[in-house]
Amino acid sequence: MKTKNVIKNIHDKIQMADNRALLYTFLGMTLILFRNLIFIPLNIEDTPSSIMLLLPILLFYLFQKSEGKEEKMVENRRFIAFGYFFVCAEIILIQLGKAVTAQEILVFITFYAICGISLNLSTGLVGVLNFGVVFQIALGAVIYALLAVNTGVNTILAIFLSMIITAIISAIIALSTLRLKDDYFAIVSITLGEIFRQLMKTEPNLRGPIINGERPSTPAILQIPLPFKEWHDTTNGLLFGIEIPYRFVIAAIGFLMFIIIYFICERLTHSPYGRILRSIREDDLVTSTYGKNTLNAKVQIMALSGAVAALGGVLTAWINVSVFPESFLPLITFNVWVVYIIGGRGNNKGMLLGATIFVVLNRASRLLDNESSTLFNLLDSILKLIRPNAPDLAIAYLQLIFVGLILILFIRFAPRGVLPERAYRPRVNGEFLLPPGSQVTDIISKSNDNLLLPNEKENEGDEI
Image (cartoon, rainbow, N blue to C red; front, side, top):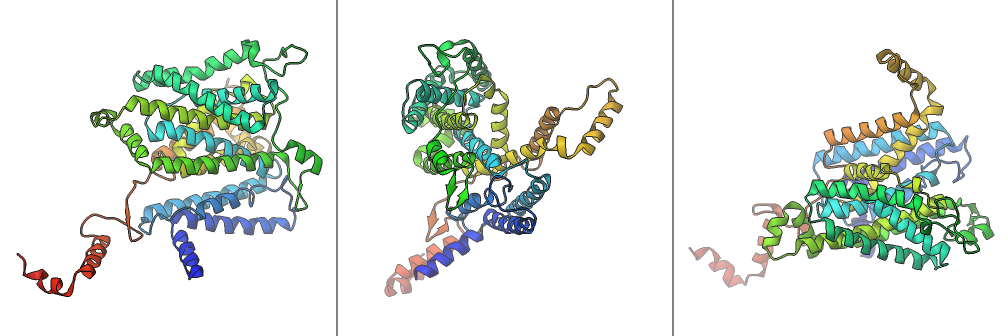
């Protein structure tokens, strides 16, 4: 009986359009990988993201609760097209060679997925126009680095303290600025990151480590202790006979953080408190008329958003093994917004897909300078025809154009994102509760008929 239930559960999950697309994608990429294994040895350092990227995403999606069998053909086409995108992107990355590795892609996917959930909490769930994501990321990174370097606090304790302090500071700032209108709050939030970045350049107390009572002259926090670094150095990164690069260890820790945050945020989203937050997003005036304190709810969710963003800052400190002011440019905020728009407002699962699309395309665009000189020459010649005195085309400009083009296409053809927010609907007997006249209503009526006594069934039609 248990085996039958497991098979039925797997079958129901495969019926979901996004699960089918990811399953087909994973099978296609596995075939691509095995085809390339004839010429390329299996090495995590040099093999692109065929298995290391798709396997955790596949497992993550297959073990989600089934949303029923009512998907429309539009959603089927959307997710199958998304699967084809994965296949095409993987072929491009494999053909481009060893410059893009699975560990690099995974590290940045986990970073942007965590930051995307942070933005989804404040903007997608409550409707606060938050452009201060980079401020919360930088604050979490600096607090963690100072605690770990200057005080020698344990890594786990430093992570929790950075989340708590960032949440408190975010709540204090939100309490004093959320009374502003959305436009003015967006202006204030976007300036916070730049103010803090300039403060990192000039404030000596935001530097480390302290050696002989003196801080370094460089505006940075250096020599940040890394998790599991001693194990990696002593074992040479060997796990079951396979050499694991250290960045893949960071990616695995980051993915575990994302899983924990995802389940916490999902429980919050589908709780009565989460429904209050969504009602504030739709119309905070109507919500306040029902006796709900909308300002306190916004402050609380901004604090939670800051705590999640602090984890992204910790990942940044681990990736760079240091904290520099240049690591927190305003561009990070806009990249997180691109992930949020692509993934879908109000859908935590979509943040992982949005981060995957953004990182894969962004990494592929960085390789065009070396691998596609013909394309660059063509674009440069077209630019010279339009503007003869224009400077030579640079890869940085093309990356910005590329990301902007992706954003425009998604806003035009998928304004709700790859995974749009789905309204919560209660279930009856494992099926969605639908309006009167639907199949589920008929099932309920039939089940009620079965509860009637024989005499009641005979007299049921006599009443007027």
